[in-house]
Length: 247
Image 1 (tube, rainbow, N blue to C red):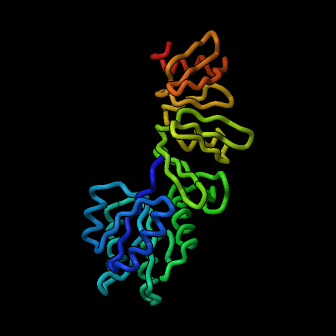
Image 2 (cartoon, rainbow, N blue to C red; image 1 turned 135 degrees about the vertical axis):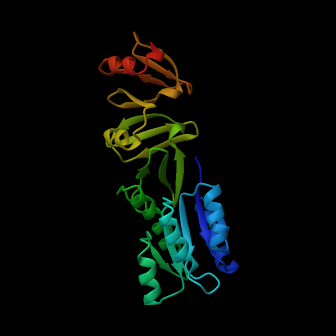
Image 3 (tube, one colour; image 1 turned 180 degrees about the vertical axis):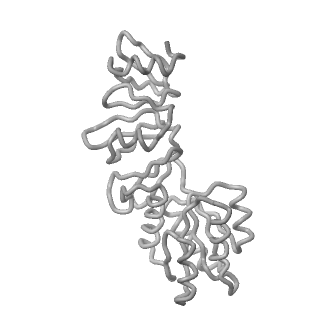
């Protein structure tokens, strides 16, 4: 389980510190920068899940200018604006960059957290409402974003050992724990689009990189975690064809 990494562009220390406190309390790793130049250096050197941009930096709309450059450079990271400016002209200028949200200072904690979570959902084109619904998640080919209490946690997809269907839910079993999400197995397979995950039973999807042993005659898969997964006859032929290393 990893924290979501957030880039914060804010030149005022007092406001930056207040934001950092809220974000860190809600499981975000925050990298704070004071100007657009520092932000661009960080974007070149690190991966970020989401970005918060203050619009006015040292009296200039640097936040909007940075967003415009990000679009031109095809930096595919969701971002939102946070500003004390209530100018209609500034709002219209910011709107053309298609931010995921435009929030006014002073920030409201819940409004900010919901805006960040909704930005992640929208970015990955999923409508699972992690902001409001228990056991909902947003899934990308690389990460799973799950609501845990008030926070959103990020799980690397390769860390998932197997996925088990439990009625209308799926239980994702990882080395560090399990996560119950309201999503069908069919939908998970579609969103994962990951060849390391193979269906071996109507109720089980297994990460083949976590397999320790397979007993075909006994219809049994044993994982590195020592979990035992049933192997249905229905999936054996395609599994053996696609994964000859296990034959």
